[in-house]
Image 1 (cartoon, rainbow, N blue to C red):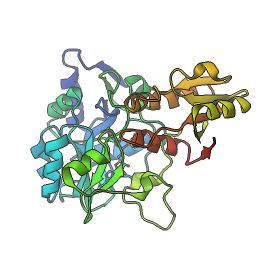
Image 2: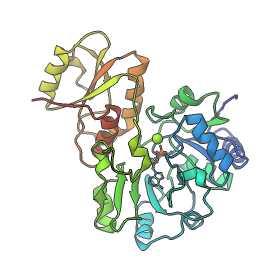
Image 3: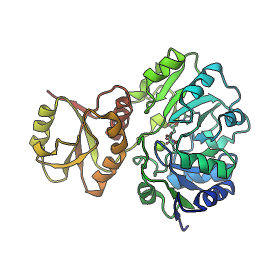
Length: 340
Ligand code: TXA
Ligand code: MG
């Protein structure tokens, strides 16, 4: 299949992408978080195509994207009062809400779960293409399954060219990590995936919010995943990533004593000078938002440079830092070394 690359600002590009989507095509679209691989959510064949193009396990459900708050009524069987509060506070924006599912949603979207995940993105191109399509869009991140999520059209091209109809290039994604996912189908709201909207922000609006144990630890074999995506290896570059927790001086000494061919430091900006290995940076130490924007591109750079082992700085687990830590922990397969 030939994959068309449109610049979002080209006249007619958004309309063409929208028409293709309505008619069952797969198009990668920019959002404020990461690029999504979109399909018409009502079209079960198109939705099946997403799983095939990504190589995604069938039981990992998709998020449905809308461009008007009222569209949530078509997708959810019920919209509780807490959901309305969240929409008012955070929509449009990088928050996905899990609700009881309407029977209209094809089972291909979410592997027969009784729930549906809905998000109203704030990115103007995402909103325009959903409107042009005239239908809600099911869209996972537009990477090959298991690879780091794409934060630029180039990343999508690397993973999916030849497998999808088109890519709508809207530049790099301003947030850089996927949306916060909160489920409202338990007695107490539950954070399933941290993102740039923090658990503290959620609590300020809806009160008590539990953090799912899978956010910070590997899923135990016996427990069922609240979010099926949590059980898969994620964001993994080919390189083995190891998180090194401790102060910079101890990190530097550790990395320098392990320097060698194919070894790199996945460090913060400004730390390269003291390190005797190849380095890839992901933002500044005090700037968790900058780390979020840079992380997935940094993971892809490791592979582009043929790195075999990357020792990564360990982000602070507060605010959006929790999301950065969560993604790095998965990229590292939960391998963490404590030093200093
Ligand atoms: O920022 C984002 O959310 C991006 C952009 C494209 O919008 N999308 C994204 O989709 O990250 P994906 O498929 O890569 O991640 C969706 C996550 C998965 O972990 C999945 O298991 C979870 O959301 N999820 C989807 N539907 C769910 C449901 N009904 N119940 C629980 N978890 C669900
Ligand atoms: Mg994904």
